[in-house]
Image 1 (spheres, rainbow, N blue to C red):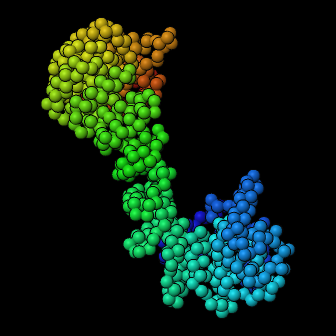
Image 2: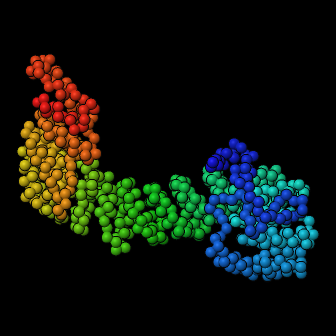
Length: 629
C-alpha cells in the first residue's frame, strides 16, 4: 500500500512546535544506513556521512551532480579552492587542494595554521568534506579537545546543500550542551545560516530563543538568514513581515534579497506583493546605484503578462521597456497587448504593436482586434471603425467576431447606431470600408428597429461599402427574417453578388420556410442542403436542433409523415430530440381534446396522439399518426 503523505507546513509547526522533520522522515520512510564515522569523540552521538553516503533527510529538487557533470563540477571546485588559496598566502596551498591532496601532508603544518584554515574553509562553498577531515585530524591525531571553534566549523560546514543537514547541526548543538561548551554568538549565527539552506523551524526558533536569553542581538546577516530560511520553509507572510521590518530600520538590506522575493513571489503569483517589493527595490536602486537586473525585469514582465496583472505590466513597461532597458520577446509582448486590450489602455497597446511591427513581423488579425476592443471600451466608435478600415487596407479580412466589442456599444441605444452610420459615411470618403463594419451596424439596427428598417438599410449598402455585402450580411438578415417572400428576394441578391450558400445559410432558410403556411420550400432547401458538394465530395450538412424542431413541429401540425424521416435523420446524427417531439405530441393532443370538448372538431379524434414515444419503436413513432390520418 502507498504511504500516507504528511505535509508539515508553518501551521503544523505553530500548533505542534515539537515536531521534528527528521524524526518524521525516519518514521515515514524506509530506514537507511549510510557508512558513517564519529568526528569529535568516540562517545559522540553525532555522525557525519562520508562522501559515498547521503544525509538521511533530503529535499526534493536537490541532489548530487550527475555522473556526466561530476568532472566539470570537480574542476570548478578545485579552481574555486585555488582562488581561496591565493587570498590566503599564509596557509599552505595543500590545504586548499581537496581531501585527497592534503590527507597525508598535514604533519608539518602547525595546529594554529590548521585552525585558521578550517575557519576559512568553513566559510567557503563545497568544502564540507575538507572541514570534516581537518576537524577529525585535529581531534584524533593532534589530540585537540572539542571546543567552540571546532563545533562552529562543523556546524557552518552543514550549510553545504549536498552534504549538509539541519539534523546534524542540531545534534552538534546538543552535544555542546552535554560537554558544557559555551555557545558563542558565532555558533548561533552558523545555526541560522544552516537553517536558511536546510529549513528547520524548531532549530531556528531554538537558536533565536537562546540568543534572546543570552542577550545576543541578531546581526544583519542573522536577520537575512532568518528571512531566507522562512522563504525556504514556505513561511511567506512571516518572511515578508521580517523584510518590511528590517526595511524600516537603518539596516542596509542587500539588493539580492529583494530579488529573491521578486522571483519567489512572482512565480507563486503573489503579484500585489511582488509589485510592492519591486517599487521599493527601484526606489532603493536610485540611492544605492544598484539598478534592477534586466533578467529580473524580464521575468516579472513574463509572469505578470501570463496572469494578465495589469498594474505590474504597466509599471515594468513604463520603467524598463519604454526606456529600452529590456526588449521582451514576441510572446510576452502579445500578453501585454491582450492585457492592455482588456483594460482599455490604448497607449500601452499601441506601444506593444509598434514593438511587434518594428521587428518586421506581419501583424495578424488578432493584433488589430485588440485595438478595436480598446477603442470600443472607451466608446470611441470612430477610432474603432478606423482600425477596421486599416485592417482591410493591410489585406486582412475582419469578420463578425472582430466586431463584437463594437456591437456591445451599438446595442445600448438607437442613437449609437445612427452615429455609427454617420461615421461610416465619413470614412467611406477616405478608406475602403469593409463589409464587417457595415454588418455590425446592420445587426444593431435589427435590435432597435423592425425588420423592414434593417432591410431598407441593406438596400443602401453601396453607399458605405464599395464591395457590397458578404455572406455574413445575409446571415444577419436571415436571422431576423420571418416572411417567405423576403427569402426569395435575398436569395436573388445572393445570386447577383455570386455568394454561395453554406450550411448556416440553409439552416436559416429552412427555419424561415417552416414558419410559412406553405412549408414545402423548407424540404426543397433541405434536399439542396443534403445534396451539396465541395470538390466533388458530399458535405454531409444537416440542420441545427432548433431548425429541425421547427420543421418537425410544422409537420406534426399538418400530420405530415415526413416528420418521421426528420426524426430518424436527427437520430442518425446523434441529435436526440425525442423528449421535445413527445412534448409536441402531448401538446397537440391536449389542444384536440379541448377543441372536441367545445364541439369544434368531430368526435372521431385520432387515437394515435395518445401513444407515447417510449412505448413505440423508434421507426414507428409517427407511423400510427399517419395511418390514422
